[in-house]
Amino acid sequence: MTEQPPRPHRARRTEQPPARAAGRSDDAEQPDTQPLTISDYAQIFGAPGAPHGYDPETGKAYSGRGNLAVGVLNLILPGAGRLYAGHYMIGLLQLVLALVTCGLGHAWSLIDGIVILVNGGTDASGRPLRP
Image 1 (tube, helix red, strand yellow):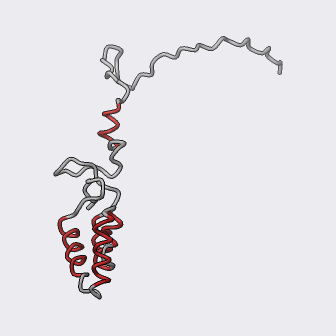
Image 2 (cartoon, helix red, strand yellow):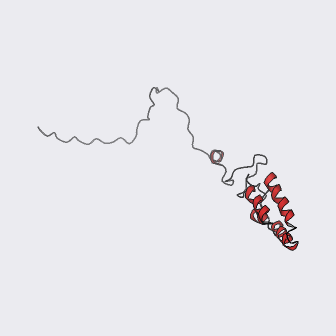
Image 3 (cartoon, helix red, strand yellow):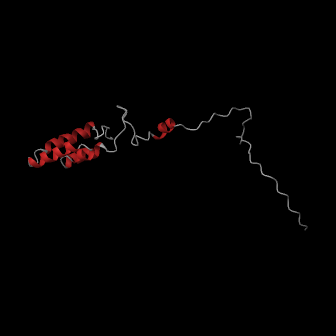
């Protein structure tokens, strides 16, 4: 067995020919690919300012708070749901009224919690609560 001399190195080509799919001819038109724009990303992933999506009825961005949490908190502890949603004055009024009237004022908070659970509500910024 004789050893063969090493092959000389060939210079590599930096440009690669475009890859062809099986069965395609060179005459076939390639689809025109464009980079995605910001509006394309917004359609696919949602707008950056609305991480929880948009309300289909009003078109406003959903709040980070859910109406289930706000409603149940309002049912359990007077004013707690309103405080959680950011309506501090209403929440404090509901709490103080329930304490001053020895629990009779809790009726306002109960009704408010039921209305939020049924119809939804808004947070302090005016955005609708998530369903």
